[in-house]
Image (tube, rainbow, N blue to C red; front, side):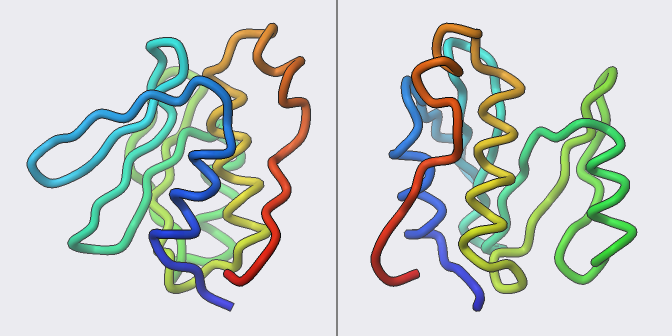
Length: 120
């Protein structure tokens, strides 16, 4: 089942110490000054930080849902089309992006992806 931007934002809101930035075409998300995600309302896509091998695997497995955004060192940012992903998978990907940027003390507070109940 596809998700929408409100579900994506519920995931973001469930993570500790997320700071939002607003650009003219997108919103950005950081934890303690380290960027981990973007949201583009016009295209209903999000960009998420992942490990390079995870970026490559996601894009190879489902190029209709995932596309390469860019790479930086050992990180491969991936664009996710919200219409093609379910809530559980999106929650795991957002959490992983957050975890790759969060310091250890915050990861200890949130050691697993947030559990969201209710309708997607």
